[in-house]
Amino acid sequence: MKRFFSLKMRASRNVDGEPHHISGAEKIIQEEDASDFATALIDRALHHAKGQPDFINLKFELLDERGILRLPALAVTTVQTHTPAEGLAQMVEILRGKMGIANAEQIVALFQQCGNMRGAAIVDVDSLARLEPDRQRGVRVTYMDDADSSSKGPTNAKNHFREAIVLGTKVAYAPHLLGELCISDDPDYVTGYIASREIGYCRITCLKEKGSPIGGRIFLFRGNAEDLQETIAFLEKQPVLVTGVPGSSFRQDRWKRLQTELDAMEVDGLRRKLLVQDASADSRVQVGGQELLMLASNNYLGLAGDERLANAASAAAAKWGVGSTGSRLVSGTQREQDCLERELALFKHAEDAVLFNSGYVANLATISTLCGRDDVIFSDELNHASIIDGCRLARSRIVIYRHNDMDDLERKLQAIRPVRGLVVSDAVFSMDGDIVRLPRLLELARHYGLFSMIDEAHATGVIGLGGHGTVSHFGLEEGPDITVGTLSKALGGEGGFVCGRGMLCEYLRNRARGFIFTTAMSPVTAAVARAALRILQESPELPRRLLDNVKVFVDALRENGIQTATQSAIVPIPIGDERQAAQIATELRAHGIFLSAIRYPTVARGQARLRAALMATHTCEDLRNAAQTIAAVIGEQHN
Ligand code: WAQ
Ligand code: MG
Image (cartoon, protein in one colour):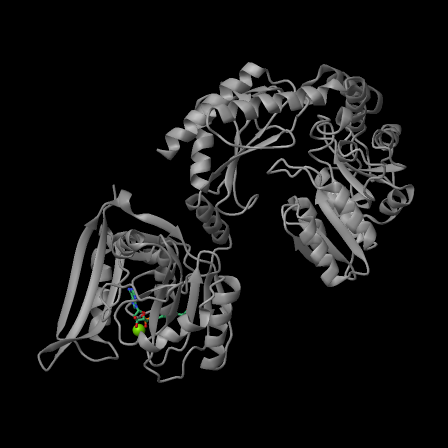
């Protein structure tokens, strides 16, 4: 095994019997590179602009390789400024605007007090109290290096940027620190930065006058006294190698950025892996030779594995072959797609329906076709990514209202008084399982003359009488202008659709790029959806059975001490921490349960959760046992 050493150099000069610091540097290196780097650092000490040293200390210290933390370098952005005033104003702006720190101005003003420190000031962002134990010296961050420094070669010159990004990355990952501000103390180096995990490493090109000796570092802290000890211990003791530091001496590898991002996700517990199943689409699946109870599927009614759908697929394949051969408008409309559209319209009590190749495309295409630069789109803060992407593609003004909060929506409508636009919401929210307050939403949209749009992805086949969806759930006479649905969840196949007035569908068929410029869904897929619709209409008890299962499961979770609530087949189990959620999901797999950990970016950071999705084909026994196991595993993790 390779041995890693910490190598530190300090050079000073005696002035009137007092040692004066001239230069210092540190590296984390492998044994084989030791002498090269020692030479380079001695060279640096001997030829420093601040003068000739009479004392050079070189220290080698063996590190435990397993104790070294590898962190991905923060992403670098640059803000060009031309005067110190402009630079400092930018710092304040970023602190307040992007990092949400109220005391931004007071914090930046602290640079006036931080001169002449060898280390950094630690500031409580709320009280502005200075917390570093030694006010003269500050806290020194040490035991860190660029992980690729040996490939970049020993250099005897100080590289401000490379050293700063290493330090900045370590600080960004320190517990209880929200970020860092830095101005170089070198009179001629006027570039500094502001950094955090969220905003990355943001260089600000001018922060002081040339020749000015001011400079320092401010670490932004939030926590209690114990937290502070933890922060300082991390800064002073934890060895860190920073990967993916942009190299100055070598051309940047275009793939490296991707690896760096993947590494960052790994560190944050956000990197995802595919779990490959070897059999079944029902409530039990085979993964790597193990049978798992499936609690993560959108196959709500168990139709994906239904023999009748498989037979419909075979029959359609025998009749049509498998491909649709072209775009709907050119060559890809077979009788199957046409019939399916009419049957969907009937099922949803709409004039017409249009097929898309997925629910994602249906949202993207519909929103971006109906809305443009002159529209205002009012969108629930928890809407699905496909709605968000549709809004972005529309280039409309987007106004986010608080989750399912119709008063907030009304306030925003009142304030903006839009002339054209759309109010859009999920029918059943995919990560929380609650149902949109549809009656009020429709009233508001009508009052302001806006289109209303509901995405019934998790509602069709689940809520409302016989699974007819949200309009039936609320017993409304009239539904939204635009209803989006999917064929891939309760209906067990794949594809999406939009239904509403005939004119709407006609318009989409003529204008929606996601309809026009893509190959139509296969006639096999369309035939499968038709069969699923028939089954749903012949067996209106299926959705009832599903919701009965939900009640059994939620009650069992409560009996085992886990509080949760839902109005649909989605049962969120809150955890919070991303890594913990991922660990619990892994542990549950060992106990025979397939349940997904939902993490950022699907939900907000710090709101990771387990998300159970129930099926009509689960047995009560399955669900009671699962609830017990889930509670036990969560209990263990919290201890
Ligand atoms: N730990 C904590 N604080 C430190 C450390 C350390 N290891 N090293 C320096 N400081 C503090 C100390 O108060 C210095 O006065 C101040 O930071 C500035 O240090 O992207 O050169 O080494 O090109 O002068 C920014 C690079 C360069 C911007 C920063 O800092 C860019 C720089 P310096
Ligand atoms: Mg300096």
